[in-house]
Length: 201
Image (cartoon, rainbow, N blue to C red; front, side, top):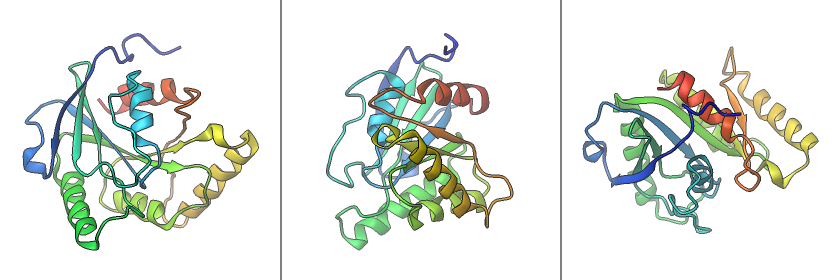
């Protein structure tokens, strides 16, 4: 059972920013979520906060186009970053997003952890591996959150996580921490919040 001190009792959207200079001026720690388009970021944020509509869910890739800050328990920020991958937008727009996200990740002093969300149903995607390796190369603390575990069997979940880990071993001496989540069944919520509170704040 989740320690009551770790539970999210208050969650409010604060603002969206198109560049790092517009982000909240704060001393609060920040925990960022990033992943391929339609990986389930909004669903996971809503699961963690127990707010069904805190983050807007869309079936259209590329819905999140700004850096979105959510204030949690008036203590820390959960940051929703634009997705990467196959969003149906122009190359110019994609380049603009990448610059915005990279600037945030590299320059945001309040950032304590970056969780990369990975759809567990698919083989390791080059864009996911590239992002995780880029974060590691730049010395940023990174965790891997596998989403949609309810969509496949437990055996396939284990096999998928193992396969993904193998795709990283050539680059990592020690793999980042991993979490299994299902927004539908609520799996992984307590483990993820406990880790954030113990290691990121």
